[in-house]
Every structure is written in structure tokens, then in C-alpha cells.
Amino acid sequence: MIWKPREKQLTAEEAIALAKKELRPLWFGSEPLLAAINHQGGITAHPLDPAFSSRGWVILFIDPTSFAGESTITYAREWHRRYDALNLGFLLVLRFPYPDVYSRTSIEDKFIALHRIEFPVALDGDGLLSASFGASETPKMVLTYQQKNHFEKSGLQWFPEGESRVQEFLRANDPGLPLPPVFSPQLKPGNDNSKLELGSTHFKALRRIETLPETSPSGVPLFTGKWDQTAASISTADPEAKIAIHCPSSKLSLIARSMLKTVEPASISIQVDGMPAFEEFFGADLQQDDDGRTVARVGSAWLYRVLDRLPAKNRQVTISFPEADRVRVSLYGLRFGE
Image (cartoon, rainbow, N blue to C red):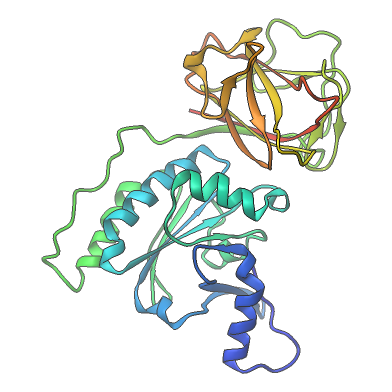
């Protein structure tokens, strides 16, 4: 997310207005607040609204397709509920893999509305806004005020410390300010076990076999049927084509999208140990159809959470596309988590 000045010398007001216009499609819930500017080999973030510097901001950088990203959202929403009235701003910066496949509508419907996010969100497609804050790893939290960072940390271990530092910041000018205990969610934060990208850029060779074995190597997909592969994804027009993988974790999500823009979504069939998944293993996006199959309904590009709470002895997963001859699905990657 970067804005480059034009050749013509602009006034400061003209430059800000132009930056806002060019960045507006990448911002949700507010006008653009920041622009990353590449100047003399360095990338810095510049406020586009004087009001931005009038208060502190918690800026959270996440990959929404990661389990750690979902955990960060849980904390962000609670912190916003607690501290928004105390003049502390919140900004969520999204670092998607394959940023070109996500539409503005899908971000609004499948992310912002689903998670009930009530503060500004920015899409950082080129990673430059993240780079301006040194966010090479996600999730990352930055507590900043008047272009000075008061706290920053990456990974999953900063949640309690991060809120403690927020409270220190708020009490700096009001030592007696009453604040709640540090937030501790009932559910354990999700962790990312591993991920698998299926496009040829990362996944050089599809291991094709004639018939699926009863078990397959942990984390290594095996393919039957006919497949096409692009730099970013795989797809098939073969309803008999399958992917077999021994899931290395208790959670499984897919990054996928229907290649046909229709009202009715496409289906991805998920089996565990050769059978439809038991309901107790359903992820948020898995359901049983009229034929008794356990399927994920896929429309626009997104992360589809298909399996959860898989026991260690029940992790042989088969993925297929029963409507592939009518509606193709692009499959970009698999996400494994605990």
C-alpha cells in the first residue's frame, strides 16, 4: 500500500487529497489515514489527517488466513470495546496471500461483517504499509502516538503484555484512571501449525497416483484424476479427482474460490477416514448437504474453515469437487492449526 508523488509539484493539500483518492479502495470504515511513502530508499508512513496524530493508535498487522490472525481479531475487538471511549484509535492492517483474488465485497461481507469489526481496516496488498512499521512478521502490534512507537512486538506472546502497555500509555496523563483487568479469553488462542501453497510458484510438482492409499504421509498431498496448475492455484474439471492428505493438526482450512460467478456457490467435499466428517469435527464453514456429504460452499475467494478438533487418530482427509465438471473451484492453499 504505497503512494508515489506525481512529477508535478503539488501543494501539501493537493498531495494529501490525491493520496486519499488513490488509497480509498484499500480502506474500510474510514477515509485513508496513512500513506506509505518510498523516499530515498526508505519507506515511512505519513498521516493523511491531522487528527491521526492527536491521539494514540493501536495498529495490528495480521494475515487473515492464519489461525493467529483470527486470535488477534478476538483481542482487537475486546480492546476496542474497552478503550475506544478513552480516545485510543484502532487500525487493522490486512496482509493477504494472493491479494489480487480478494474483492472489496468479500472483505466487507466475509471478514468485516462476519467478525463485527467496528474500527478502520486497511488492505496492504504490496506490504509497504507493513514495511513502514517493520511488520515483516504477522501478527504484530504497534502502539504509536505522534509518529513515535511506544510498544511493538510480533508473534503470539504479546497479547497480555500489549494490553498492559496500552494501560500504561493511557495512565501516563491520568494515573488514577480506572481500567479493567487484562483480557483473558475463555478459548485458547489458535496457533498455526503449518501451511501449504498449491500454486506452481511454491508447489513444483503434484504427486499424482492412480488410487488413494488408506493413509498418506503427514502434510503431503497426493492427487488422483486430472488437475491444472497455475502460479497461484490448482483446479480440476474432473468430478472424480481427489486430494488425500494426512492432516498434521487438529484444524484444517482452505483458501479457495469458485471460478464461476453464480448465485449458487460451488461445493468442496470433505471426508475424514473415507467417510463424511462427524458433526463434532465440523469447522465453521462445513455443513451436510441433502445427499449426506459434508461440504464447504465456496463462492468468492476466502478462507474456508472446514475441520476442527480432529483427534490424532482421525486425520486422514480426502478433498474432492463433486461439481467440478460444471463449476470449477480454484484451490490456493491449505492451512493447518491447533
